[in-house]
Length: 134
Image (cartoon, rainbow, N blue to C red; front, side, top):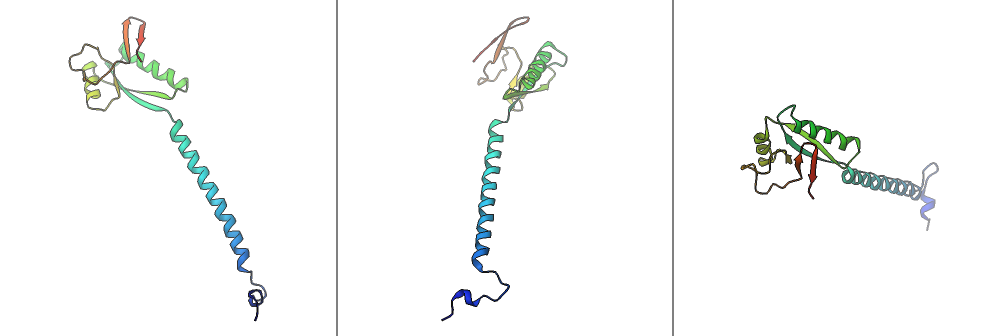
């Protein structure tokens, strides 16, 4: 009875060698896939969170303060970024907050139209001073 090696004609490669090459490529492809998946997950976990903040009117002290804060957070490579949205004033800022088109808004705490679930992030005490809230 002839063995399987006897059936291979000259010039043909045995199937076992092809399987070793295929196995090596499979291991390489699997390793590459795991690396890309881990790098993608790391990117998603470490990318900065951007908060939209409604502030107005244009060229007001409030807007300049928010823009300076946004720039400082960007330069400092903070994990939080601010994207200022210029509005006509506090009434429009609160309207954007209420409609969920802004994550934060600059307005007076005693404003009667302030959403009930809105909290304070900072309270301006006097010109140039601020108290941050946790």
